[in-house]
Length: 141
Image (cartoon, rainbow, N blue to C red; front, side):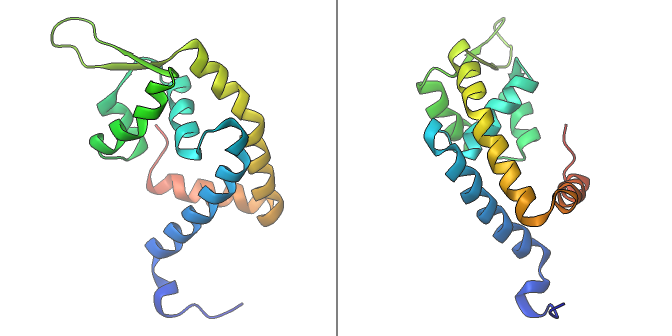
């Protein structure tokens, strides 16, 4: 095994480099659906957490609220993500429209293909282990 030295010792750099690589892999598979992996992930979170507030979704996604609002704009403009408030002081709640749920379902086979490619490249056991170790740092909610 190659000795790790210099910048490669930085945990953050290693994770960010791999994140960019994985983003490209998933985006390539999702291209036919006109969704990025970031958009797909937002749709997936809204499937799991319907009627979630923007603040709670930002916390789960580990994103700044303003960044999340910008990321949601194209999904809202496409009619995939809708919002509602209940009462004068209620938080804005997000949910998928029927078209949003259909888009998510359309993209699932492409996401599955990206998962399969990654698992074939690094081995299923290793992929599961890497995901588990990353979820220790930022657990799934």
